[in-house]
Length: 229
Figure 1 (cartoon, rainbow, N blue to C red):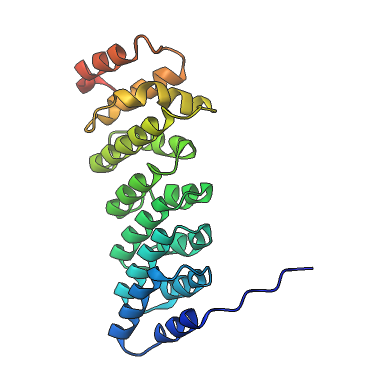
Figure 2: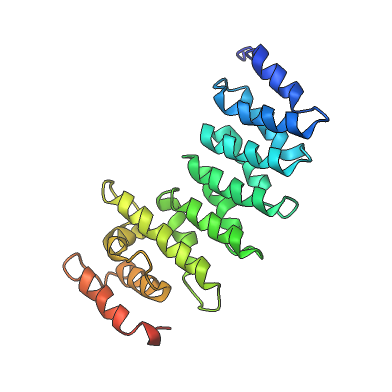
């Protein structure tokens, strides 16, 4: 027998009503107050504000708050906010919010916008994927490919891979992709050239790099980075 749904607390009910106000300022104040409410019923209220509110500030604050709360139930609403029918600032906030939620299902929606026509969205998605763990590695590595892609996006991708690699130093790498990045990622500079990162990762994946020569291998790649293809 299904468990009865817990009734919505009075403070959540009142906030939901305020979010339907005709006064923009009242809706903004309401959504700003929502972060202080810990009851799970606040998630669908904020998700509705993100989907339907006409004020971009309300939508942006709703997205940010959903990310700060960090509940996986918010992922579908935030994923939808990444799409083209939303204000650019809201899309960027939604990407960052997804990056704060520790759940495997954030990877797919973020990966889908890495090559978005608006490169700022791709950069934000890459940054968010840097928090998503080893599942994000294959999607990020693809961006290191052809050099015609936006350089800032590729640079953001390297930073994301570097971040994942550092997290992997305290974990057991379970996939070949994670093991390869665990080996070479910690040696990437903050501003590492994307081609250097790609070649080093591919070499590690192919078993051409060992813990003993990883640092030197990457140093040699940097010396010829202008000729890498």
